[in-house]
Amino acid sequence: MGWDGQRRGALVIEIADLRKGYGTGPRRVQALDGLSLSVPAGSLYGLLGPNGAGKTTTLRILCTLLAPDQGSVRVAGVDPLTDPRAVRRLLGYVAQEVAIDKILTGRELLQLQGDLYHLKPAGRDRRIEELVALLGMADWIDRRCGTYSGGMRRRLDLASGLLHAPQVLVLDEPTVGLDIESRAAIWDVLRRLRDGGTTVLLSSHYLEEVDALADRLAILEAGRVIAEGTPSELKDALGGDRVTLRVREFSDAEEASRVQDLLRGCQGVRQVVVNRAQGYSLNLVVEHGGVVEQLRRQLAQADLPVFALAQSRPSLDDVYLQATGRTLMDAELAVAGIRDPKAERKQSMR
Ligand SMILES: Nc1ncnc2c1ncn2[C@@H]1O[C@H](COP(=O)(O)OP(=O)(O)OP(=O)(O)O)[C@@H](O)[C@H]1O
Image (cartoon, rainbow, N blue to C red; front, side, top):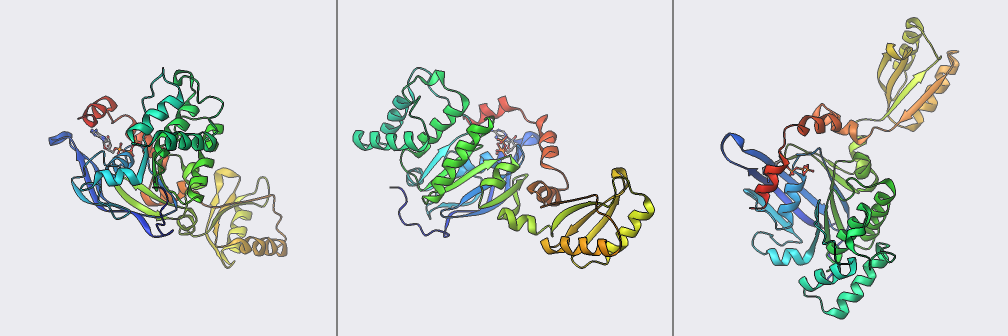
């Protein structure tokens, strides 16, 4: 079991043209609408998208918990539809909400879980010890689960998903609702697993989480992948860093227009816009770092001061905005009122 030489970089998850709808008639929802995705072995891969984009549905299909209407899925070459047992051996799943027994201790729960995986008691207990160390659970693993904080429960969920040393770990929103410290602890564990060769696939609607963690990511919108690549590739595709320039604290239209003309003449500078509402500051896009130095020199030659110059890389939110025409936050707000979580829970239990 475990990492058995799947070549790093080979595709360990391959999803092609996946379709899945829920319900019938006018209430039918097309959760996945031709979703395709490839995850390289040994990578930390993020699925980013607002609530309702289809992340959970994709992960549940991958983990053999749900059948698609159409499309193909392979996990290390194995089809979850025809050989679910083999896929479950290859893969560990940490769901969004896990019901944890409150009376048992964390260790007892893991032992039970190990028995479900048919691990032999000695190997099982050794593996639990490894996970207790990896996830920093030594101080509380022998306490009853009912006393655990959200962060502790998430770490226990992670340990459950890792008990059988899967090649691929799939996590649905692993840090939702956690404080910054617990979130950082989980990020650290996920990075260490990836460094040890495990492929980690996680869904998130936190931009910063995917930006900080993922080697590659796919942005999902309405059941499709609308952008895919490394965080840098996706940002670079937007064409350069954003710069805000103020020559004075309060400039005027005439001076701003002079600066605008000068900037337009600089190589590597694009999209120069005067922002009247912000004291006639100028917003522009620069192609690479050296352009800013060149720009400073030209301003000095033209006897123009620099009161403030801020440079920032485009964020994943800019990527999302470019692809969809709205921010991720606006997309979340748009679906917040539409969904009926109670009805969904009922249906997913069928
Ligand atoms: N069991 C269900 N019954 C009916 N509709 C569902 C069910 N599960 C999901 N949906 C709908 O399918 C779409 C995709 O949902 P999904 O849960 O896959 O998205 P998500 O990106 O994971 O969002 P979240 O993080 O909120 O779960 C949504 O419109 C949702 O309302």
